[in-house]
Image (cartoon, rainbow, N blue to C red; front, side):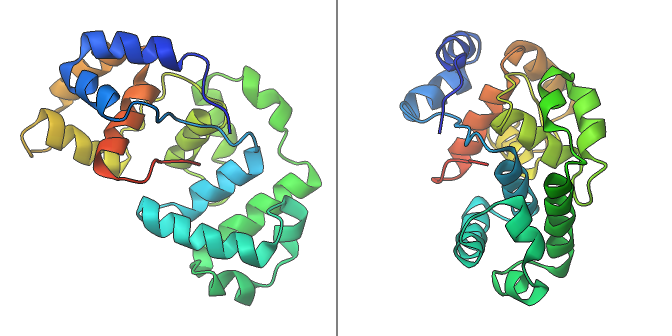
Length: 206
């Protein structure tokens, strides 16, 4: 897995701009966001991780990976529903993974053009796939494309971290979020990653 080239600069600038992040960056020194370099696996992991904890998602992924042998689109597309369900996947997530697998296998998803799309165009393209909403598209932009300024406000973990670190346990207000967004730009992906890290001993990886 690779670490984004901008990470050192981003952590330095965020640490100078935000005392909370300064503390977290030093607390988790040596840990970084890492890309697995495989578009299909990143999206499959994101689908499996929807609405469950990092730990639970990793447990399901481990069983899924063992059952598949090799996590590749053509192979996943041929797997039986009963095999996938036995890994801990809901019927809905099985359908999502099958749709994603078929689209990768038949070439209907043109992954070569994603690098050149802006964030909103890419979200629109990815959300045509069953089960991929804005959150999953944002995880893909952060973890596969390594875009530095993604701010997934719909993520429950991020909302919890904002409440804990910046709002004394209350929901973060729109005004506070706007202030933090300005403070963290153009490194909001990095700020988000450290806030996630503060909540869970297992680093978030897709």
